[in-house]
Image (cartoon, one colour):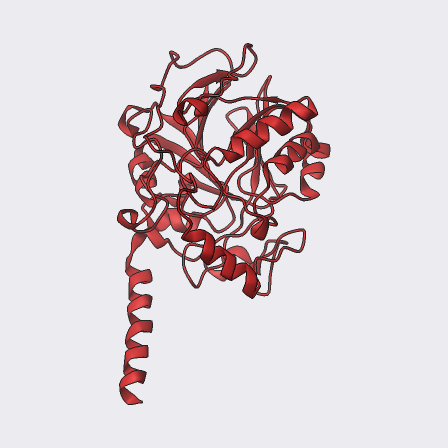
Length: 364
């Protein structure tokens, strides 16, 4: 019995030390930093809509079964192609957007460069050697070649959106980081100066070099290790310039917050809307593709660019299923769904817009 007790103590101590001294886990914010938020209560942040993330016994059994299914086409057989970035001379005179796979995007608006959820690592894991690898194998650029970044905008602290190695490489290139409440604690541990970090609660706005940036609700959760679940906030973002307004959903299940965002800030010229890594068993925190189209309509969007797919396997669906389902749903609803290749730049106010089914070539 004593031997078992010592073993358990050793395991607990080892996990504690691993979390404490592995930088990629980040840093839990101090309570006084977050408790003033109206969305924080009883020691954690809460969704506007009650959102259960628990799974019953049968759901757990079916997930274990699905994990070991073979020939599920969950990742491409060959590395996905990328378009070399940049394809335009910057600064460019009109708003343009480039999707880098998953949720990482570059927006150039009113002469300012904004990076959204720049996860440029090989794997969304605190230990990249052991995680699933990026579908494209390479990025459309080297981080060293990127232009000066006016702002990095983060939606939440999950590994597929906030990457330790990427922040380390970007730090000297970025003027300002805009994050939901509490996420700045991770950045500070990684060497970002506190003066470069601005934390916002839901429905807070800030003026930034002529742009309006607003944090808005999302229906999700946060955390980077076993003891910091929902200790930081998650959010969506509104980016408004002189002649362009863009909505970035971050990660979110479908809910009434989308209509509220549309009423407050719509219409939007473009929505960057989550579409991928979903499953009916965790539908409250990740939209199904048909819900992606509904959310786009709710916020009063015009052009829809599906994100959160095309880079990593984080669910059980086939890797092409999100884009196939969302384009079908978009056609049925009369929505213009953009389908750029990874690294391809879109001019927001200049047609024609990318509509090729490039992923079909990868299936041949």
